[in-house]
Image 1 (cartoon, one colour):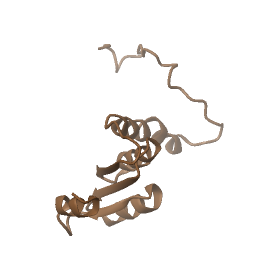
Image 2 (tube, helix red, strand yellow):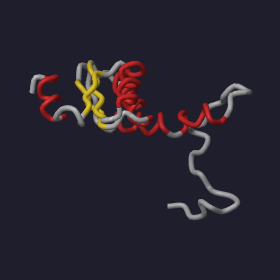
Image 3 (cartoon, helix red, strand yellow):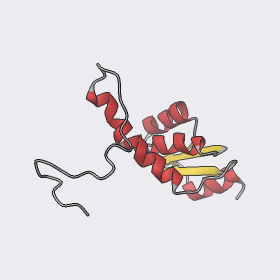
Image 4 (cartoon, rainbow, N blue to C red):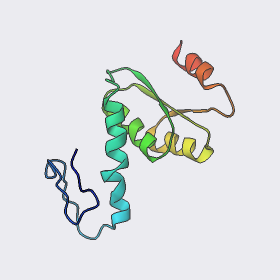
Length: 119
């Protein structure tokens, strides 16, 4: 690794590789998901080797999970199923990510997945 993450200066290999220019006037709070939650969710989906037509289940419908769901569709998934226990997150998964949902506090997630996917 590279030492010095809390130093005055840090060496960041390939720092110019993933940088994007953003328009003036956008507050940092609105840009943070682009630099953290989206890449993490995308990488998680990418590591799953999603093929066109796949059904993908994402456990956790928080910010990273939502971006993983959107990324799964970008990578070719036919269906995405969000699994969580918080109703507001499941609602967001339906609205933002077009996901089917399972509330694991209300039903057995494993059984629900079997039923929804045909096994």
